[in-house]
Image (cartoon, rainbow, N blue to C red):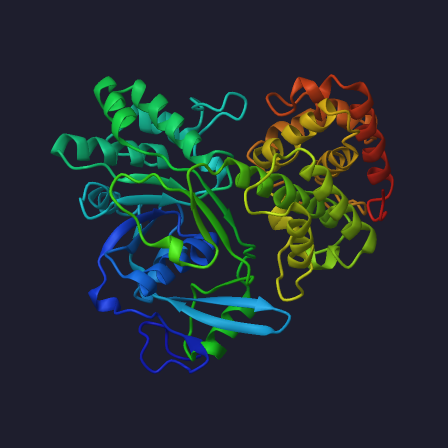
Length: 485
C-alpha cells in the first residue's frame, strides 16, 4: 500500500491537480453532510470555481452523524480523488477545496463556532431527505422526528440540521453578524422553500424575534442537482491509488455528466459557479427540478425496484434488458407530458441522454442503493406526476408499474424466500401493514395504499388505476423475473 494522499506533491501524472494555491485558501462555506454526492458534485463545482475566479470560498465540512468520511478527509488534509468513469476509461481529479472536517457528535462546539464566524457566508447541506425532520403529509415540521424533538427541547446544543442552522443564525443575530445563506442540495422538491418553512416553523416555537429576523434577512435558494454517484467500492480505492500514486480512503466515483441549477439569491456573496461547465444560475429553479425529479429520478426508481426484485445488481445491468430499457424510455416520455416547457432544454434530447447515462457500463450504481427510502422519494418522483397524468386523461400505466414494483420490493423477500432489509424510515410501519396479509396483488396493494400520508386520494380513489397497480403487483409476485409490460 502506498502512502496516504495528504498533499499534491509528487502525485502520478495521471492525476489532475487543483489549479489554485491551497495555502492561500480561506473557508467561506460550511457544508453539512460530506457524503459521496457532496464529494462528487458540490466540492468539484466549487473547486472549479476557485480555479476560474479565486476567492475565499474554501470549504469546511461537518458530519452530523457518523465520523468515517470526516475522519478520512482529516487524515488526508481535506484532499480526495474523484474518479470519472465512462466507456472510454477512467480519469482522476484531486479535489483541494476542503480545508477542515468536523464530527459534530464528537465535538459539537466546532461546527457551532464556524456557524457564527463572519467568514462563513454559505452553509450548504447534503444530509438526505429524511434528516430534515419534515412531515411528508404536510410539508411542515415533523414534531415527532427525534432530532426536532431533541433540538426544540435543547436549542443551544443541537444535533439535527434544522437545530444547527437555527442556533447558528441566532448567534449571528445576537452578535450583529450578517446571516449566512442556507443552501440545500438534497433531492427535495423546492428544497430551499422546504428548508425555509422548517426553519421558520422551528423558530416560531422558540423565539419570535429570531423568527422575524430570519424571515426578513435570510434567503433560502433552491437548487437542482444531478450527477449519478455510486457508493465507493474496493475498486474505487484501487483505481484512485493507481491513478494518483497514493492511498485515498475518501475517493469516490461518478459519471462525466454533471448539472447544477441554482437560484441566484445569496445574502453575502457566492463562488463564481456560473463559470463552471454544468452550472446554471437562475431566478427560479422549479421547472428544471420537476424535469429531473420526474424524468430522471422517477425512471431511476422504476428501474431500481424492478431491477432489484429481478436479480439485477446494477442499473447498467437492468439496461441490458431490452424490455426494461424500453419501459424506462416510455416512462420518461410519460413524465415529460406532465411538464411545462423547460427553458433551454429539449425533453426528447434529455430522455435520450438519460438512457445513455443509465446504460453507462463504467458506472456501478446498485439497484438496492437507489431503492432505499422509497416513502421519502415516491411522492415527488412518481405519485404527484401520476395524479397529473390521470387528470389529463392519461392511463398513467408506467406509474402503476413503478408503484407495483415498489410494493413488491416492500414485501422484503425475494422469490426464493430469501429476506432482505427494507431500508426505509417507515419500514416498521410497512412491515406491520402487510404482516398478516396474503401474498397477493389485491391484498398487498390494498394494505399499502392505506399507509398514512403517502398516497394521495386522487390515486387511491381512482379505481381503474388502483386495479392496474394490483394486477401488475400480482404478476410481479408470481414471477419477479418477468421482463414485463
